[in-house]
Image: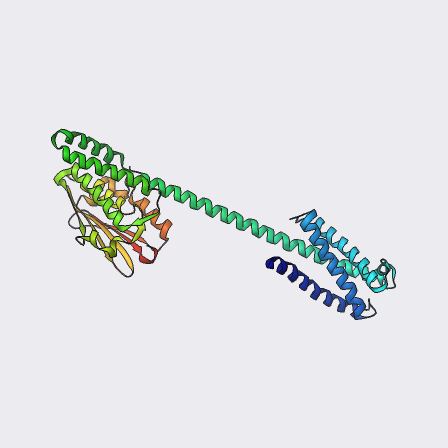
Amino acid sequence: MKFGWVKLLLPTFRNTVVCAIIAQVVLDIALAPSYAHSIKVSLSIGYSIQLTFFVFDRFLYPGSTSYWVGLSKSCIGLILGMCLGGLIISDNLLILFYYPAGKELLIFSMMITLFAGVLTVARVRFASQGDQISQLEVKQSRQETIALENEIKLLQAQIEPHFLFNTLSNIVSLIETKPKLAENSLVNLTHLLRVKLDRGRDKIHTLGDELWLLNVYLELHQMRLGERLTYQFLPTNIEDDVSFTSLAIPSLLVQPLVENAIQHGIEPSVKGGNVSIELAFSDNRLVIKVTDTGLGFKAPKSANLTNHSGIGLSNVRRRLHAIYADRAALSVVDNQPSGAIVALTIPMEAC
């Protein structure tokens, strides 16, 4: 209610000020015998035009930005105002139309009224166009956000087909010879698939959750690759360090880096290799390094830094840019004597 009164009183105050100025101008050009006479007529016309605009905008043509409607409102308000002014100064509705200076006053009033009407309509049109542009921008931004979220969810939900098939095949082969290992592997695979699908609906989770997921993921690969794959987390016993594990990070952000190291570094290598995941704080940033001792960039498939059947490094870069803009970074360098080092840097204030 308070806001409605403000919207009503502010235009009325501006209208009153303009009418007072016009009354002085009318007196100066000798179209009125006194300022009292002039201000009464000016306020009558001004308030009548304001009331006419209110009635048209509220009941007859709400939201109209037509210049013809605006000019019609101005002319109707002018005629009503001159009639009201005549009643106030002499109890005669039509006196302002035929008294000695009536013609000049009518022409002057018409000029002022038409100018004010055009200006008002132009202002309404400009505001309407501004609102439409704002609505379009909001709609476009919302659509882009939805598209980005859908894309990220799709990327998060993906799982490498050949890894899934090979893991299932290995589990089947272990059922008779090593049933306990087969059972544990199947449980881990079930947990992994459930987490991948569930986390596809979540934007963030804790670093502890990510480390647990990585451990399960690496255990499954170690079951497939045997002694060809070893792995470690640095610092040791990091899963017990609350300063790390309680941090919130985008879900499934580190796992693609490990997946890339295994697929393009360890698996193509006859002797296999080691994968290490190292975490550290540096300049209010969380740095996660995934280092492997596999083939590195010697492997043909890793030349474009993408995982052809899963989530590759290029997709991780896209997610980083979408979430953090330029405040995060992903770097890839050679590891000596072999392999690659992928460093993921995330600003702590955004975690």
